[in-house]
Structures are given as C-alpha cells and as structure tokens.
Length: 370
Ligand SMILES: *Cc1c(COP(=O)(O)O)cnc(C)c1O
Image (cartoon, rainbow, N blue to C red; front, top):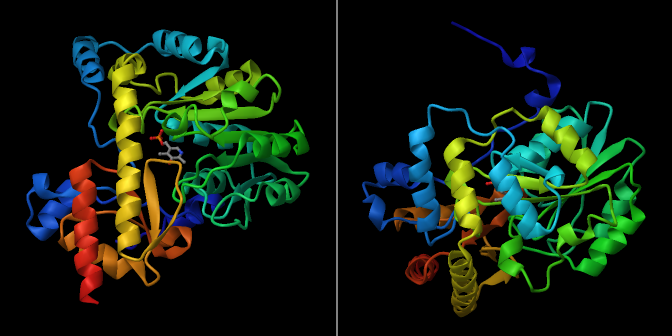
C-alpha cells in the first residue's frame, strides 16, 4: 500500500532528521560476528566505570514498588538536589534525561513566529528541539570550534525567545569562561531565556568552568541543565534536570508529563547523588584517559580539539567515515560527526585505560596501512 503521511506531519517535523545514536554493541556483534565482550564502545560519552553499585542497589530495591506510579513531584530527589546545589526545590524541573528538559524549554517558549539561537557544531538536540516547534533556528558560526558568544548575542532578534549554550559543548568539547558567560548574559535581554547546558559540569567542577547555578540569582532568564547520564553513570536510567528561577520551573512543570521520571530512575539518581567515591573515581579516570588519548593521538601525528568533557574529538585530516568503518571491524565503536559538519573528525569517548589503548592500537594499524 502506497502511503504518504509525511505531508500530513507538521512543517517543523518534516524538516527534521532522526537523531543518530552511537552504534549499539549488540548490533556490531551481530554484524561482525564478534563477541559483545570483545567490543569497545567509545561512542556515546557513557561512563566507562559502569553504574555506581550503590545506585544499582537502590534501583533494584525499588522494583518491588513498580505497580505504583512514581512520585510525580520527585520529592526525595528534588530535596536532595536542592540541598546539594543550594537552591529551592521550586527551582528544579526533573526530566527523563536532560534531553527531556531541553525539549520542554523549546515547547514552552517557541512557536513558528519565534526563533532560537545556538552555535555551529552545537549539540544536535538543540536543532531537533527547535525545529519540532516550527521556530527558526539561528545558527551562529563558531570560532575554533567553540561558541562565539559575542556573535551569538548579536544574532538575537526581536522574536528570539531562547538561546542554547553548551558548556562544554558536545561534540567539540570546547568551553567558555565565567567571565565570557557573564559578559554574554549582561548583553542579553531578560526577555530571552538562556539555556546553559552543563551536561559535563562534574568533570570540570572546581576547575576552569563557570558554575551556572551560582549565576541564577543575578540572571533570572538563565536556565541551567544537568544530567545523571555522564559523570553519575546513569545514562540508561534517563535522569536530568533544570535549575532556574521558580517561575520558569513552574512553566516547565505545567508542560512535562506528570510521571516523566520513572520510579527506579528516581531512586537510582538519589543514591548516585550521595556516592561521592564513585564521582571522584569517574573524574580521575576521565582525566587520566584524556591524557592517554591525547598522548596517543600525538604519537600518531593527529590533531584534536582540546576537550573539557569526557570525550575528545580527533582530526584525521582525511575523510573520517572509512576510518570509522575500519575501527568497527577492529571491534571499536567511536562516533562519526559528519552530521555536525565535521566530516574529517571522530569523537572518541574516554574509556577505561585498556579500552583507550585498544582504540589507539586499532587507529595506529589502520592509519599505518594507508
Ligand atoms: C549527553 C548530553 C546531554 C545529556 O543527555 P541526557 O538526556 O541527560 O542523557 C545534554 N547535553 C549535552 C551537550 C550532552 O552531550
């Protein structure tokens, strides 16, 4: 039967392409006849430590309550987060991953008459969320792969309702300073909501990156998003949140699904939040792995974009797709970023030392053959 439902879909959706996730381990295992345990996946910025055992225990224990709806208000998790962050629970919006919160922000503030600003090479969820609403996406050229905050401030139009900033940005790993962020926020009207996506915040905490939450009092139009998917190791549980002024949180809470955060996820996140040892280990492992990969790339004569995240984007100075395919046949999954306009780069998530070593060894073999 010949169908054409695409023309029935709303205009914004017709202009979207599906999100391309990292290749799943089981899929590659089937395709290449490899054993899943022999495959190294460094493709989705997941925590190579696996989940915190404390979080797993809490999630398993919660399963006996699965016949009940979860707490739609997320009381316990909001209470713990508010204490940790020094904010009021009314300032929090919980999401099914921070992706959920990013989409809620777009739905709440955008329509076909509005526009949103983000950077070239910015996280792909921003264009997806914006396009779904029919709003105009204003993409500002980057400088050295990073956000050009001055140009972004200038790109704001009368109908601009949202700006998305990723600090650090995925897939480039680039970051801007507290001073630059403040300079930007000082220029932007309070009628424009600025979303500061801090998905990798924990990796740089106490370091060079600004802490968006500290700026909320001064900038009522600022919304900070964070996640349990990266340093807290719970990507599969889907927990993220926004911190904002209570009025914006109220708007987002009207729009979200009443039970958008499932029951095991709430308990897992609560436990993970208190597992300081796991977080410290994640950060240390990430720092060491970053050094290991940088050293390896340097030995292969490759350039990379300096990264503040848990991944590093390497410049192959040639078409990256054939190298990506060759890495797959070695059982190594990384992430092509041609869809971001970076056809010569590959993004490599920081893995365990042995995983990083296998990635570098495969890359060395492949490049050596050329
Ligand atoms: C990984 C990532 C997220 C988080 O996604 P979740 O939905 O919380 O898993 C958000 N923003 C950026 C820039 C990311 O890289």
